[in-house]
Amino acid sequence: SLVCRLTQWSVPMLVNQSPVEYLMSPAGVTIFAGLVAFLAILIVWIENSPIERQEEICKMAEAALGKEEEFRSTNQTAFVVGYTGETGRALVEELVNRNIFQKVILIGRRELNYEGEKYDKLEQKVVDYEKLDDHSDLFRRHSVGFCCLGTTRGKAGVEGFKRV
Image 1 (cartoon, rainbow, N blue to C red):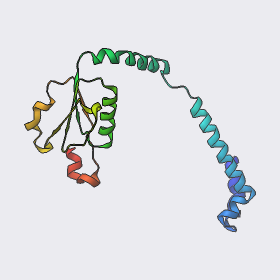
Image 2 (cartoon, rainbow, N blue to C red; image 1 turned 90 degrees about the vertical axis):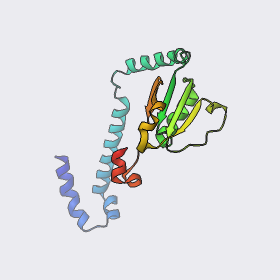
Image 3 (cartoon, helix red, strand yellow; image 1 turned 120 degrees about the vertical axis):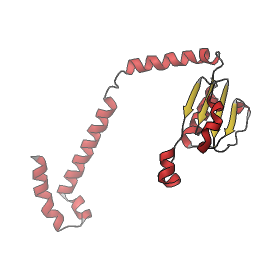
């Protein structure tokens, strides 16, 4: 096979040469060119591979855009748990920019500073996650709930990581 021939030809040369000299040798250039060709073929294949159910996904996305105004008119409310992390912050920004909820309750251990008129529909509630039952009323009577809780073992330790 080609791999066996390249290996037989190139391995003995590597023993007597530095890596730079080897890469500049005919064997090194051949292997490098083969790798580049393989990567080029892989990239073209990935770019041209059809997405499964692409037409159906596009139709669903278009239908969802048309329903936003209808949803907005129903005065829905939402809560977000874990809004201070990266994912939660991105979600809150998306919810504020889309403006599809009448009110969004942000539930967390601390408050963030939201300034500006576009944040008027946000209401922050500070809770103790160790005593979450004491705050059960915050989770009632909402149309939608989002959970963006997360941590790392490095930040919370093993036990804190398990609790989250």
